[in-house]
Length: 585
Image 1 (cartoon, one colour):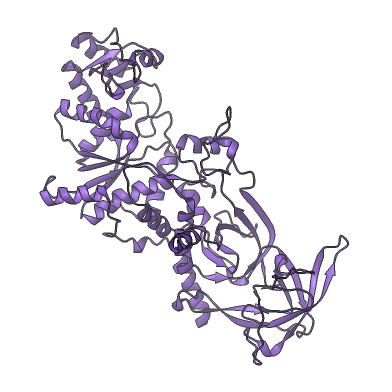
Image 2 (image 1 turned 45 degrees about the horizontal axis):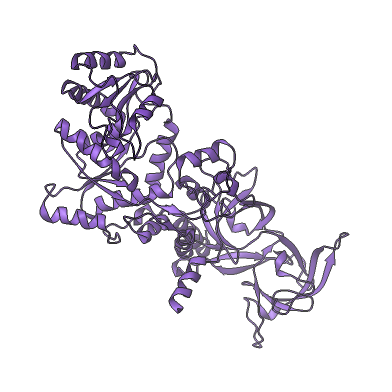
């Protein structure tokens, strides 16, 4: 292998790496959560410990909102010399699957974070949770209720109407203990009984109105199988899991703020270790839905091609599209952590992607909508190898060789038979530069039977090899190209926003968010041509197609089918333009 090819391979490896070896710690943007942790470290509140956790429920794939939480929890642990657990809150066997567990583990690793030996599951604590539930029953703080789900909701009351006590609320401790044990033993049907905490049916906080702790569910669990037929509710399990694991800072999104008094009540009544809960605003992104329920609907109803569809905000979808871990981490760092809900412009995420890929992606030439060019005065059968820059942002990436031949492909959009005033690219009688190659002049345009331009005939100036003219004459356009004899066939998938509105939930009366789906969110181009250096490109390899944008090799790209590329991002940076306009005001 010669020196230029060695540098090209090195450049590709650098660009295609996950970036996990460059995860920075101690660089988190200052925010109120970090300030609280820093104060606790200063006062020695937790004995100098910082122990966080990322606690996903395995009922779907992770998305960019989860990435924010991952970066926050793992980032704080790293910055303060602490630990972070990856814990699955797997308390609902009906919605949880092993597939989701595997995908979550893969996504967190891909983002660049490591939980060491602290992979935890809520289901590992089912026996301890049950014993604590019996403790509350024996203390007269929990009871078995025979109301069904609809009746329970009715008795609960509303924000303006206090709840009513269940007719089963004052059962004796002995009866409650007997019924609860029989619930565990499988004597009763699904939904026929629940275990509820005895708190306050008149509380202003609806979560404190005798919440359900256990429900009967005769369903196999992904990890415990058929061992259990009663399962803990999330509100009962959540704080207990943190307590068992010795978490110091239980960092949650804002919707759990009203649940905190309930978690506190459970922990205080049991007299067990009590972590500190801190709430922050979840991430909302324009032109995107972040609800796992809605994402599941899009997947199951066939609006997208699976959880890893590049149009989705899932981490697996972004990985497939070509987003780098570093770009996602950088985005999460830039948006910061707040106490109020807001929507972030998706242009900022795309800016972070371009910013990272511009530094790391090898440049290559591709033609997505080919138009053949024949250089009539170029020697028949001659092939030249011209030097091309791999990455102008990285001098160490070196050069590569691209073959030049008398028959080429350029983009259809780079030629116009009757060009308007400000069109500087190729036209009859006009001279342009071919990137890294020669000046060419169009002499004739050949049309097919339908009147469409089928091929161009040109001449070249041999003295302009490398793209410069020795006589100092200038041209106004430089075109990319590929050799027709050496080009590889490819299929390219172009993506737009999945929704037409910034807020997809803003739908007309009687319609839902799916009415705002963008029917043109995917365009598949066949017959594309790419330069031969891309032969054997590994799945998920990222490149900048010169003048066309950033692209990634799709995992389904197989030799028998040819290369398939997903467009990661265009070269146009909307966010940078917005920032420039704001700075000029």
